[in-house]
Amino acid sequence: MLAVKKVLNNNVVIATHPDHEEVVLIGKGLGFGRSPGDEIAGSQAEKFFVLRNETEREQYKQLLTYIDEEFVGLMEEEISRLEVTFSSSLNEHIHVGLTDHLYFAVKRIQDGHGITNPFLKETELAYPKEYQAAAAMAERVGNKLDVRLPEGEIGFITLHIHSALTNRDLSAVNRHTQLVSELVRRIETFLGFELDRRDVNYLRLVRHLHHAIERVETETYTENQDPLLNVLQTEYPLCYNLSWKLMKVMQQRLNKHVPDAEAVYLTLHIQRISGAQSNSIR
Image 1 (spheres, one colour):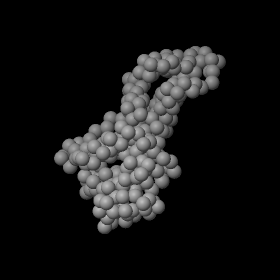
Image 2 (cartoon, helix red, strand yellow):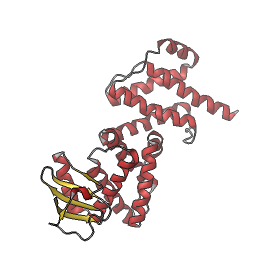
Image 3 (cartoon, rainbow, N blue to C red):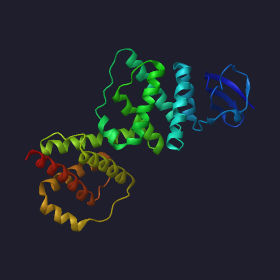
Image 4 (cartoon, one colour):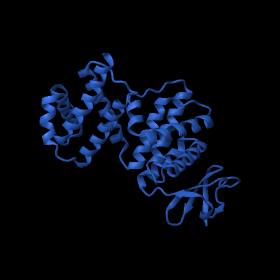
């Protein structure tokens, strides 16, 4: 048996645990009619989680001092739903990071402030499943709190979800998204036209850039493409030169070596977009 420490809402309870100090229990109607000190069986919960990291545990306790308990409970329900949706456990930092972020986002919206997200489309294209889950969450939370969460906010929620799913630091996920956006802008400047965000070639380019950055970061390089390098340099010299400039930017931002083979893939993507634009003008 555990002892109730705090009731967040009808479905979420914080309880003391003999081995883990504090646990969060989640289950339909679990908190209804309960008060601090009441005994509760852990088996009654549909799900419970433990913040094992001491820093995360302290940050979570701080959340409870300035965030409405009903809101914390709502977020725990949403995070539990995410784990069901993805059939995966999430990095425990999401209990602190996403709750804190979304609480202040809602406050800004209620105070009449807008939310802008210059990396929205790149985020949606890079992480479509996370984006879909974030959109559904934004709608449920918005309905519950009687606010409308704008599309830009869905992009930020997406990054939190992706970070928790992949155990990657949120700041690194943000940096990678911003780098992709910078590379796209450089391609647009070079080609002299704005890329169509709805075009399948743009989708392929953005996803490739994200995967390329991840490969460079993890040093899981692709196979050697030297024979193709010479062919592409001759056939598409402008796109080939641009690909090397983009690789230099990646290398500077990531502070890691970018393999020569990347020039092949970038050249092909850029040439495909450039060719499609030329055909549409004719």
